[in-house]
Image (cartoon, rainbow, N blue to C red; front, side, top):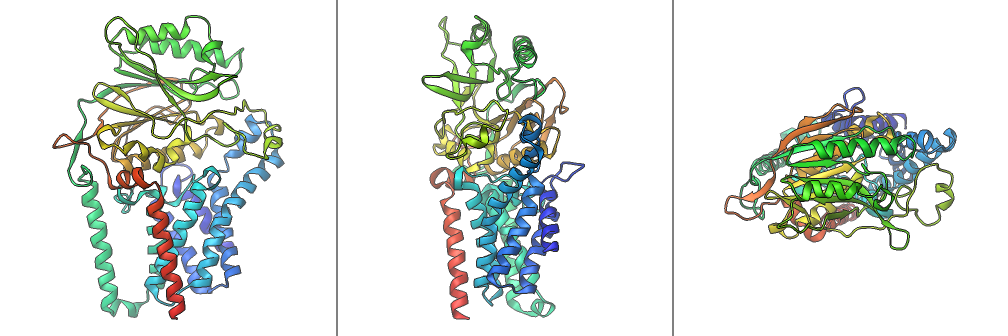
Length: 519
């Protein structure tokens, strides 16, 4: 079990290596090979297999989101032992999915090597889907995120992050089952050629975006000049009336009034007060600045009232036609954070122990309209909403109105200067790969960056500093014939969500079960 725990920690490190913050694709592959090797060599009973899966996943998940301790203890005021117990409890609960998957694999384990690899991939996919969707879903740290660069980075645009993780698992099981004498069998070479062909096809597909999966894509209109604001308001002062609030109001107002970029973006809750709590004329002055000029702005701010409820929102302004002021663009966050933005049933006792400005927010609708500016369709998402690629893909249901640029508004200051920042950056890079759209990130403390449609960071601001990141972004989405270009992942996920992956997982499990019956 110690080897399984070490392999789990290696998987955690592969997502954002301590010291560099970079993903390490080969380390993720090694961790999966070790796990598959343990299953193949030990031939465990289903109970032993379940325990193996639990230990691996528990170590992996604790090593991934240990930084939740900081938000619970440092900022939430929860006693250190209770904060440790809460993080460990979450990891243990999520590890049950992987215990189920490996226990079932140990129970079925077909003798046929191809079926065994298929079954392992299918069950791994099933566990990832369960973690990512049940009880609102928390897929942070999925193994596929280690592959935003490397040999498998061509695949997210076709199968998404969960598909990449399943492929990695299947290849790991296939590798540990190979023996020298297998290399002399023609079926081994046929399988290798099929894998190489699939990889080559995915590589070609990545470098040839598709119009409804057929036509090359091109940059949408001229590049858009950006100014991304990073206020670096200390998290323990951010909502304090005597310190962080006046500092945020003054600094963001100064930048919003003085910036010359075509689009100015301020992060999640950059304005930490409701509009009715602001001094008279504050928002109206900013609105007049942008509705009467030749620039646009997107601003993170909470909205609502006690009667109708509150939302975590983005407010947008752009020049109005004629003398009338155009109504502000508004985006409301759809996927809310448990305990931070809504209180799950039966857990009010836990939130009462925390000293965090919790809110029971209303949920925005899925697939809200984009903010249109200078020929670009700009799609906001807030905080960890970019963790759910299938929900971002919902905006691609009508290719003619598909976004050309994605913008993430975040405040990761809750987790300090930890690997949470780097892990979230890799998540945004994966969304850029899946959807082949640039992802712009405006954050309170970092990472404030511009990511191109290939998942490459082209501009970055120093973390935990107060400043402005200026740069250009080239929106993507127009096909050479004038239509809208979307990736295969965006095409199927916008129509059916994750159901195609659920179906593939079910078929893989069924194939493994039939293989065991024949054995």
